[in-house]
Image 1: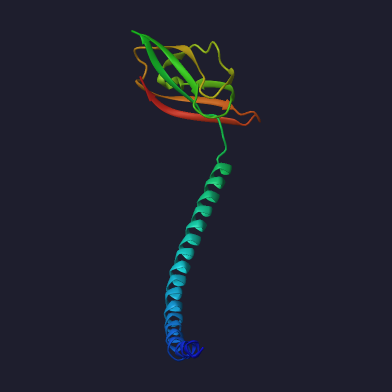
Image 2 (image 1 turned 135 degrees about the vertical axis):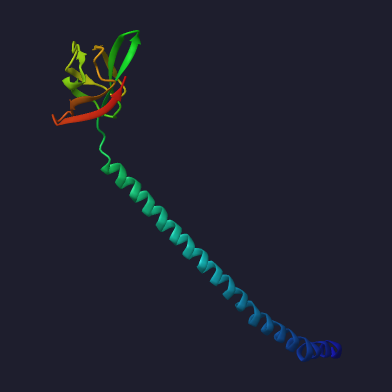
Length: 166
């Protein structure tokens, strides 16, 4: 029993104070490491929040652009030589909406004869086209304007004037 009492006394005198000092040193060192990690974590969270805000701003800008971009028809035309001395005018819808009452014209000053057998074309789907014969005379200009006109489904009138050459 005396031996047990001596062991308990040694533990109380030597082991307990040493372990207490070690625990105090660990408790002092550990918060410094935690503080350093907390600072790093805060920096990363701030960068992540900035990135998230930029991403949301980009998405909002993209949505606004899509809302502001109205789909519309765009009628274009070009004269194409199909055989020696024979020409056709090709009219197409390069927009993304149906065009109504599609027509074309080339001012008389360019001296190009237009047949106009199928115009005004009732409607022209996006990506669709039609063709008509044209007559190119010897005195016709090589460079000319083609004026295309059309309406949207609300009856608003649009015009596209392009400079073309043979």
